[in-house]
Length: 327
Image 1 (cartoon, rainbow, N blue to C red):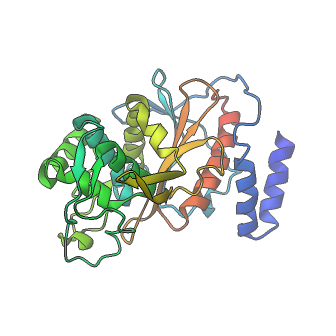
Image 2 (cartoon, rainbow, N blue to C red):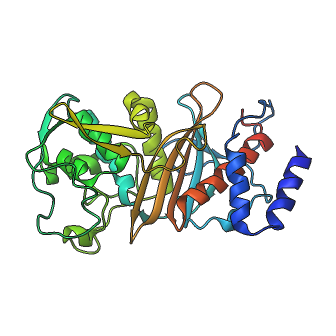
């Protein structure tokens, strides 16, 4: 194992960084190919959080300085074990979260609506807005009728803003936002606040500039954990690389998942993207580990290249898993 790490180290420092990223991509494709090793879990520090959390020891052999994200977190979760932080940076710093907002939008729709409930598409949040943040491809037309389940899938797979807004309108924007923020408090997301259900910057909705949705990498990981273990359809939706859209029984569009790493790294079973001017590039990934009910939740916020950052972080977390005998 040491020879392997030395070889990777030598390779990465002897070539330009973009070649290093290609190497990490290949390594990530065999993320859990090695056999499990049973070692003692090292002494861990407990985070001040609503759920018990441990921190694995840090290694200097990874190139974390090359990660552009201002905040990142790799968190191991299991419903019957303490959370364990593998990698972290500024995980309690409040930051804009762009369309990672839609994780909470999904949660509220999933808990307060029936999947088969029909929704009529109405005008957008600002009918005269020309912002390209708002409307992706215009497949949802005024007067169209979709089920809640269809809108949820369209929203999560393509990060579709029209679908998110349509779900909000069922009970009204103000009431929906109240539920989002109440649920955040219920889950212990103490550094999270929602001003809209879409995730766009406030300018796109003609709102005050200080009304930007914000959260932290740690809060978002706790939210993702809740979704994984309490909403079984969540993983089935975000694992879809494509989603067909039908109107009146006719296929009108096939949406492509915005998560480029889905299918590239086999252990990634789903995720969510987000991008705005204020938030930069954001990404949440869920990785299935070999043991039953063990997952990694990986978050990057305010990144310049979220997919390269995620490849690097997953490669480094693979090393940490085996160094610390986490499973």
